[in-house]
Length: 399
Ligand code: NDP
Image (tube, rainbow, N blue to C red; front, side, top):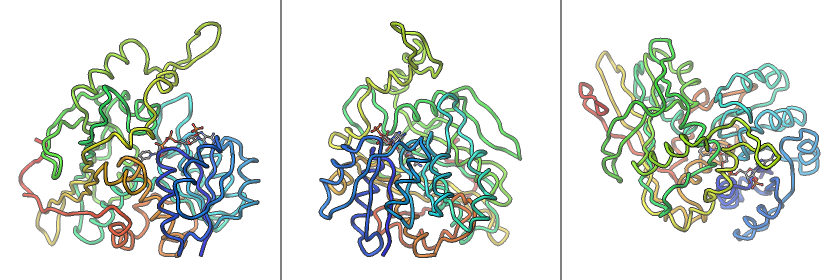
């Protein structure tokens, strides 16, 4: 019986709140707090048990501390924006409350996607006997746990990892992003980057393209991107020689993105407009469909997983571990599309394991540093069942 404080009432916050509410045996009291309390109230009204809501500016450490001291949670799930990671970690440290998030810290004015500033909390969390779990969504999150589970149970050494993120969903709009457009477009317009033999290699944005035949959704074009889990997995998977991340985009999506980029709409450099400073990407976010509104319109499935290639008992082995998630089924269950669902369900599962002491430790942890077994045992019942297919170790499915 524990109290959970959820910060952020967007697409993912809605799923996290629904899923916590479905498990009163663990989350006996819930408080959902966000910048705009009306959004919290709207989510609360969808539930069949009462929860508390609150207004908080998560950029303000003092305001967070005051909220935490008044609600006294046993765990905090941060699903606001990556800009708030450091302030929320600071507030958790000051109040002794365990912390969990789904995305690494981003500076509002720079697209960096790196863990450095969150890892810098390591000593303070360890000294305080407190725990911070980083990156417990789907990717990062579930994909890291697939890798950790493979390392523990399937391989002596994993040599190559390809993370494949496919969205076969259709929301009917000519262009919309499935999660926060600012974060999504920052990721996609940055240079591609992967890690090989201890070095980072860069590619031009969306320059590397492959096709892959996904179970449940068919053949899709994949593009190589940098994604934050590459940083921690390249350090935490022993014997690793290469790790890459691939995401599917349709021709239509790429064409829209190129036009927006060419006209300067994806820039994060402020410009002067009618006597005031605006950031083009933030303006673009304001005119694009709200990701939370895509739920009722999205049809189709996602397939996200990892191809692990390594050695077991002296022999090569290659497996694909993945989850297939259906947008419409997610909407029926929690009034949200699959991208928010696949992020929120691992976050709630991770928080449960922390509360139950199955994930424990003093310090700051990326999820692959924690025991993958209880997570893999539970995640199917929580709503994200996984499958594993043995692949021909000599064939390259991404050739
Ligand atoms: P949304 O933009 O839909 O929701 C973000 C929420 O945070 C909004 O309710 C917003 O409030 C609130 N918020 C923003 N700033 C503040 C603030 N200063 N104080 C309090 N609340 C604030 O995003 P998503 O739900 O799509 O994403 C949530 C998180 O999940 C992001 O960090 C995202 O990067 C991460 N994510 C991770 C994935 C993974 O697989 N690991 C995949 C997808 C997302 P308002 O409504 O007022 O703007």
